Image (cartoon, rainbow, N blue to C red; front, side, top):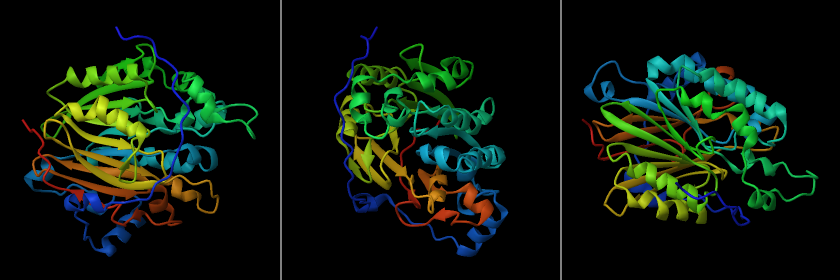
Amino acid sequence: MLPSLKPVATLRRTLLTLTVAAAAAVLLQATDPAASRADTAKAGSTPADAAPATSGSNERKSFTLVVIPDTQLAVQNKPELFYAQTQWILDNQKARDIRFVIHEGDIVEWPSRQSDWERAKAALRRLDGRVPYSLAVGNHDLDAWACEPAASCNPWASIALDRSADYLNTYFPRSLFASWRSFGGTYPEALVDNSFFTFSAADVDWLVLSIKFNPTDDELAWADQVVAAHPDRQVIINTHEYQNGSTRTPIGDRIWNAVARKHATVRFILSGHYVNAGLRVETGDLGNQVYGIQADYQTYSIPNVNENGYLRIMRIQPQAGTVIVRTYSPYCAQTGECPAYKQDPANEFTLNQIDFPTR
């Protein structure tokens, strides 16, 4: 039995510069024709370059993981962006073989505002019973972020003293997830503050581990125990803050040292939080390559509000040892109001020579 959780120290959110050069050795930019993208965008369905082929052993042994970065400002300012994301997932679940959806946290902007949670619920819970998903608790999802008076209070000081996430647990209770076949467990046991799920796809057994924002030592100890208890599963860590672009943050350092670096099965660490995009490749203590992938497109700008509608499509091909990553907006593809894809090297790349332990 782990000890009770303890409050954490005041945090600072320091923006760093995007760098992907350190990971250039494992990146391969896509070279798909722009015309095929335009046709796909008009159809409002699936990105052609992330679509499974009709033949080929590698594609037959592949699947899709969808990653949704911070939705807080879509929820606040244009919820149809979030609705379009999850509807696209449902519409393409079979064609893409979408096995799991990961939300990287900051689900809402202001946690005490009921409309934020109602909109998030309307977007996410349409997946219930159809596509399993996991939620990381972001700083905006903590109850104390909604401090008073809103115009002058310091939410960072508030969440340093109170890490409860009662609003999130009300709209997404443990009982919702506990009935799913993929559900593994939570910490604390009655709450979804930290959670893990398992599934199998493309001849690989997987574990998705979602760790709360700025985890305590007790939460990290729990996460370490979960990974150690599943030595036969490839681990995808989902946490709100781990890196900023390609630079690991102090919070990320704690996750790396307490959990990620210690286990040969840890493969990916996914995070958002910073308005940035980047890749970080590191070698764990047992020689395994760990891929840190960060992305967040949030903006408070109303003229640029559609930036809040991008998600990540990860096409995982274990037999080929590749992962194709695309950044796509279902809303933009459907409406033509904005580019359907982000095509710069930080947002469109392929990871190669990954040694997946296939059965």
